[in-house]
Length: 310
Image 1 (tube, helix red, strand yellow):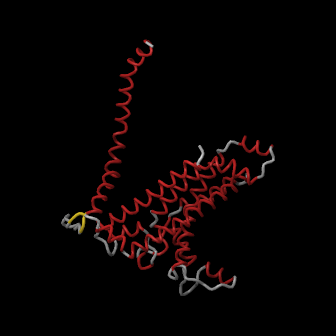
Image 2 (image 1 turned 135 degrees about the vertical axis):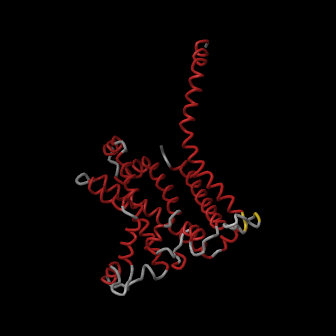
């Protein structure tokens, strides 16, 4: 006991010195986070409660909940909220499920596996606006052509649809399709790596027991890669709620007239768009988005404790 006390007294100054070094190393990162993340978040929170804020004079009429009430009753914000929720509900599960199926296929083949992985990853490193331009060419009707997609629809006896300037459901279909196409490569890369890291001894034991492929997938593969699936779901929800450039790539910058704006697009319009110059309304909308994302993330974390295995 005396020896332990002696060693502790000797090591204590060394531990304090190491802790001081660690904090010194962290100071640049903490300063960076404080200036570019914590301060803007606090500033947005303050702006959201300042009623009648004037950007030129840096003055406001009072403090209250008017900005939140205005945003929650604004038809443009309600439309943006509807679009964002539809985008989240459709694209996150569909893109994750399709990516998992493709990853399983890539993991089961040996010839040209690296080539196929590279092909599937190409859309992720391609410029988003360039991909959006290609999608617009495929779906948009012009005076000269109805687009490749409509040509295929007519080939099978259907009627052509204006997916870019037509009905709401058609535009939402293109936006969801485009978003799924954009996010799938990253998910395929992560899931393929997760499948490759599964210990093959589990599969060999299941093969000896004569376990069916479906049972192997549900009882071995899925539980072992569940942390990665959960990670992709969480990041997918956050990314879908922050969607903006996808809609711009397809429908242009005037998303309100197209009826395809998102919450992030609404915040941008309140700051810099045709209705710009209202940082209080933009801040209130940003806080609402923050609360929604935080709530959904918290729910997912609660679900993880019961369904994710480490």
